[in-house]
Image (cartoon, rainbow, N blue to C red; front, side):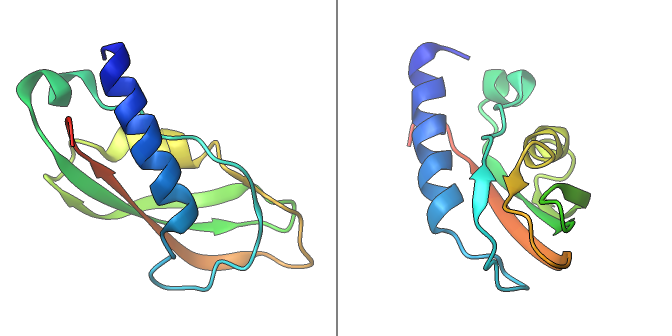
Length: 111
């Protein structure tokens, strides 16, 4: 990905990561680490845009577990990238795990 594309994606993911609310469960836990997914090179070369929604749990220690793609358009294009990214997220420790969180990741080229 070229430098401009990375900057646009990073800015979009930063805005999304901190402003988008999970669709199923209230995300009251503080995120301590957030990673943006990399735009898949094949999708970027072919000009493919889309999104993927990931459902996941956070254990008491703050690690993401059981991440799975529950919706994507187009199917299978962004799955690996979003799962790799969300598994790198971390949350503040809590007394119990948090189940049923969802996060949508949008992939747009140049805008």
